[in-house]
Image (cartoon, rainbow, N blue to C red; front, side):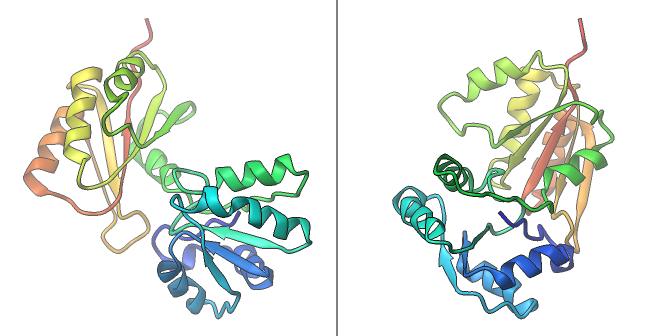
Length: 220
C-alpha cells in the first residue's frame, strides 16, 4: 500500500519510489493519472486499473497472484490507499489469506489540513465524505454532540451544501476551516464560523478538493 503525492510530485518518499520500481505490478485507481507520476520517476512497472467499480470482481484474482509469490503495489490518484479511496477490500482479503500487507507512511490530505486549521488536534474524528442522501441527517445529528474536532472530505460541487448542513445541525457559530489544493500552487485555507465559511463559498466558488475541519461541541 503506497501513498502518493496529494499535490506536489516531490512529496513522494524515496521508499515509495523504490517499492514501485521493484513491484511486479502496480494497481492504480486511474492509470492515466498514475502514469504521470511514474514517468516523473522513471518507473516502468506494469500498471493495472483497480478502483471502486472493479475491486470486488478482481480482488480474488489478485490475492491468487500474491499467493503465487508476486509483489503487488497499490496506489490511488493521491494520498494513502484505503483512506476514502480503494484499498480496504484487497488488504482485508490478503490478511484473511495469511499474506503480508505493508503500508508505507506518506501523504494523507486530512493531516496537514487538520494541523493547519488551528483547531484542537490532540483528539479528532475523521469522517471522510458525509452520505450524500440516505443517512446524512442521522449522521449529522449524531455528530452534533461530538466534543472532538471533526474532519471531513468534500468535493467542490457539494461544499456549500455541506457547510450549510453542518451549520444547521452543529451550530452557525461553530469554529471551522477548510483547506483546498493542499501541496499545490494555489493551496489555501479559510477559517471562520461554519456560517461564515458557507457564505464565503457562495460568494467565491472556490475550486479543488476540500478538507473541512470543525471544532467539537463544548463539553457538558
